[in-house]
Amino acid sequence: MSLIVQKYGGTSVANPERIKNVAARVAQYRQQNHQIVVVVSAMSGVTDNLIKMAKEILPLPDEREMDMLLATGEQTTIALTAMALQARGVPAISLTGAQAGIVTDGVHTKAKIQNITPKKIHELLKSGKVVIVAGFQGETPEGQITTLGRGGSDLTAIALAAALKADLCQIYTDVDGVYTADPRLVPGARKLPEISYDEMLELASLGAKVMQSRSVEFAKKFGVVFEVRSSLNDNPGTLVKEETKSMEDVVIRGVSLDKNQAKVTLSCVPDKPGVAARIFKALADAAINVDMIVQNVSPGSTQTTDLSFTVDKADLLKANKVIDGIKAEVGFNCIRANEKIGKLSIVGVGMRSHSGVAAKMFDTLSKIGVNIDMISTSEIKISVVIALEKAEAAMKAVHTAFLG
Ligand code: ASP
Ligand code: MG
Image 1 (cartoon, protein in one colour):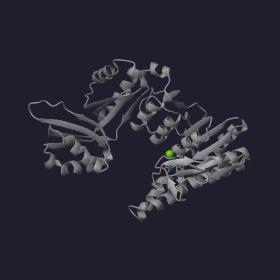
Image 2: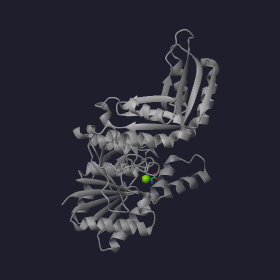
Image 3: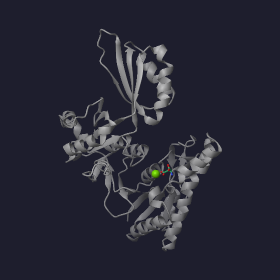
């Protein structure tokens, strides 16, 4: 007998029919004598709708009340899921995050889990029940309801799997697993049987939004192996785990395209100490996340340089304003913004032990006439900024070059 944590996301519990479908799957596993803890999200769209209603009342609602409100989304699904299991004759009980022993700090709407006391869950499992836990929520030591940040049900599942020392953790979603590229954009994309935590994190931060990044970081820290799979079929999913030696044999695990970035270029920026610090401090103070930064090599003679960086498209207006505000003080010439860019990246731990990866990527792009605007690299990733209109074709070509 093993202990399994299963997490079902919003689309998997989107309506009573889907919830019955979840109950059928849980019942199947239980028949094989496993102990099962189920973590559920709110029905898809519910959390968004709650936020929308709150904002219709007040643009910046009190965060304690926001948590009180948002926690109701998951509370609806735990009760319905427990009922769906009971309807099949499976003993089941629902627990809020607090009842499940999930203790968090007091940072409302983005609380961090401090500890989990799994005693109650263990007792209920021993008594033969399936335990359904509300994802995304917890309680402070003082008894205030908190939520863990958007997408936080993933974190609940991973943290519970760690605390319960579960034998298996399954994350059920509306995709079959993690793919070598977005299958809607690249017809040749394949599902990966396995991927390392680091590769998964890079792909997530690059816009392949399969899971909340924080939960993958947590899984890495506590060594929780988990499987991402679909609740709509029985296909095996993708196993996410610590890197193994054989993972390095594959040069590239995946290709991703982020169309949500915009590029800002400052020209004739004085080439002296403190300038970059001033610019990026101003952006940081405005809570603008900067992704890629490229500065030209100083030519020496002109004493000025060009500086480009990318920000979320949603932050572009704000970034422009901030930069404009320090233009006179810093003394650069002009600001140019370009929203029509795509950031194309290849990711793989195999890059560490294979040479010529960047050359092959750039060669592939040159053959289809794609100009590279910016380049950045990490140990397991190469990213280029290119024109948006060519981004999808470039993605396909790079996928074919590395992954067939
Ligand atoms: N319902 C929450 C959200 O939409 C948490 C989750 O789905 O993981 O962000
Ligand atoms: Mg979700």
